[in-house]
Amino acid sequence: MIDKELLLEKARQAMVHSYSPYSSFKVGAALLTKSGKVYTGTNIENSSFSATNCAERTAFFKAVSDGEKEFKAIAIVGGKNAEIKDACMPCGVCRQVMAEFCDKDFEIITASENEIIVKTLDELLPESFQLRKKRHRAHR
Ligand code: THU
Image (cartoon, rainbow, N blue to C red; front, side, top):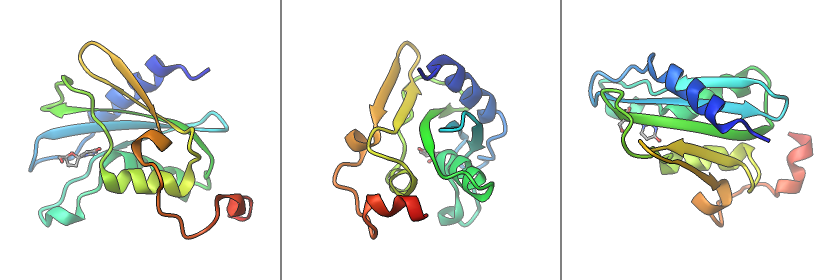
């Protein structure tokens, strides 16, 4: 069983390091590998806006560059000035990055002020684009 509260707490802690001088929207993510490790990430903005990296992708790229390629779940929290009110759902680009490394049952955990929301990757990005068949994953 995934400890959702613990993963959300790690995402909240990661949010503190958000570099977001342009939007003031601070996001934290905590990515759980199948081996039980947690990689955190924050959004990192840039004056050339398109160079901004979301918290989710920061967590994925930290993990993958460390040799991790098997993932169970990600917790995401975010809000203006770090005030968590609404659930922070991953953007389309981050969903596509998740689809590169994760199976359909990968869990996306987020929280609003008063509830925890859990979705599978298949719910958030059905029929995702794939250049390789998933069964070739073993060779990655
Ligand atoms: N952002 C994330 O980090 N993750 C998301 O899922 C949505 C948006 C960031 C990007 C930008 O720094 C700020 O939130 C406002 O869009």
